[in-house]
Amino acid sequence: MNSIKSQITKAPLDYSSLPFGYQKTDMNIRYVWRDGSWDKGTESTEEHLPLHIAATALHYGQAVFEGLKVYETPDGRAQTFRIEENAKRLQHSAEMLSMVAPPTELFVEAVHRAVRANRRFIPPHGTGAALYVRPLLIGTGANIGVAPSSEFTFIVMVTPVGPYFKQGFSPTKLVIEDELERAAPHGVGTAKAGGNYAAGMRATVKARQNGFGEALYLDTTKQYIDELGAANFFGITEDKRYITPNSPSVLRSITNMSLRTLAADMGYTVEHRQVHVDELHTFVETGACGTAAVITPVESITWKGEEIIYLRDGKPGPHCTALYQRLVDIQNGVVPDPYGWTQEVSLGQKL
Ligand code: PLP
Ligand code: COI
Image 1 (tube, rainbow, N blue to C red):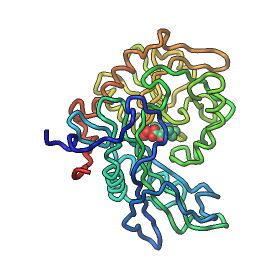
Image 2: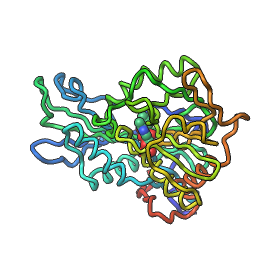
Image 3: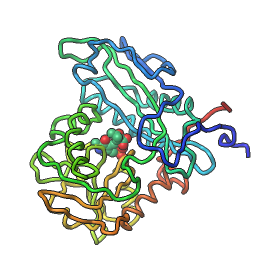
């Protein structure tokens, strides 16, 4: 066989049981924006950053990021999934936080460079793992007055990962967090800003201490469902409707966007609208979706002491299973991609 697959010696890791965690790889790429333009980017083996002590990222939270995965196909190619959407969302996040984002072309080039430099860490097809790509944009200029940075650093790091929720494609229990809100309607909830995650950590820690997988947030009126700390939310009704919150304070999930298309093509009626918390009783299945979460089926949702149970036998339901399979088959190149969502990453020559 003459494919790249036969030439690359994989890093010796137990790919089938990887956690969703940081694993050192060979290289990261760093680009700097200064005086109105981006430099050509530097490949670095260093895991640390030399950072000015007055950098706006540290003091004023000018820090936004992205998350996408690279999948190995059955014939050993590597592919991204809707990478331009990640580039666009980073631009949106940057705009919300008065930052300068890389143009789409530079974003795509940076991801391809980082993946190529770390190709021996791309998890083998069929292990359920993927190469997680984490583009990060931070204000690195020094400011003590509150003002946008005059310098930005764009870093792309990668790390091989397994599923975000412990057991992967198996049910997890959620609890509705109604004491604190993840994001305000006209705030930065639609931005993938580091501060949103810091603000949600209290709820996640509390949920886990109480035996739940994650917290589910309501909007500020406490009537409508927003999302989870690191994933969007959807519900399925008996009459095959895929219903997911449209809210001005949730992150616009690329996975959810894709599932809306897939669900429609699989015969579901798709409703992207406000979802009242009382509707939780009308769903036969619910799920969390995102790059890291993929689809994580929800076993039950607890609110005000009441547990709404969706799955009684510990197994994912038929709707989540069908949607999950369709999505991961396209991402992993097991079936043709009729949507043009996947893009091959050239892996170059033998290492
Ligand atoms: N919502 C939040 C808060 C997230 O952190 C994520 C993860 O990226 C998502 C939703 C899912 O978005 P995507 O499907 O683009 O990964
Ligand atoms: C992702 O799904 O890519 C995310 O960014 C979630 C992450 C915060 C764990």
